[in-house]
Length: 185
Image 1 (cartoon, rainbow, N blue to C red):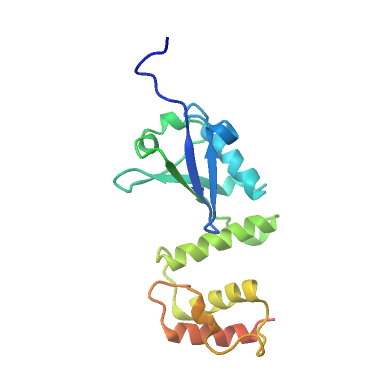
Image 2 (spheres, rainbow, N blue to C red; image 1 turned 120 degrees about the horizontal axis):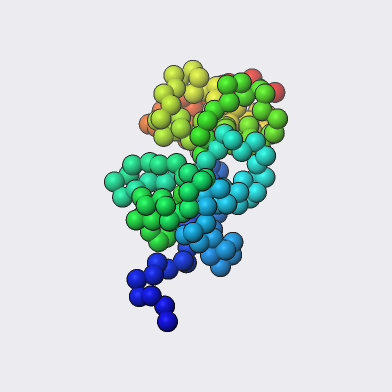
């Protein structure tokens, strides 16, 4: 006979990744329970993303008053009281915890890509202030990474307006981004 006050071990969590996709972690699929250590959860996310240089990344969560916390790899999920009080379902956010002093020394392309996604998200959400000339340059690089080099037959005027780079984006920035994109090869 089970105890009436036992905490159910079922666990369902969505991890929001930097590319805006979601990774579901559940008791049924991965065997994750409230007694699972944070390091195990991080391991699933790192394997899903094929990350090798893992020391820069972590998982955060918000409590009910929107205070942010990092998931401690040494603690069980149940020990993260602020997380457990928000669900189920639970939401974790994958992100850069520490930036590399010199990004050129990163060995893996996927690590650099995750850094790019984090900076892009931080600029877009206004967490990193960005002057218009730098925003235009960063936007042009982002456009080039998605669309390739400028092609006047494929890229008609205004094509940049489909993308968002900064909060309250203006046409002036879009024009500057388009001009810069034309110069990149």
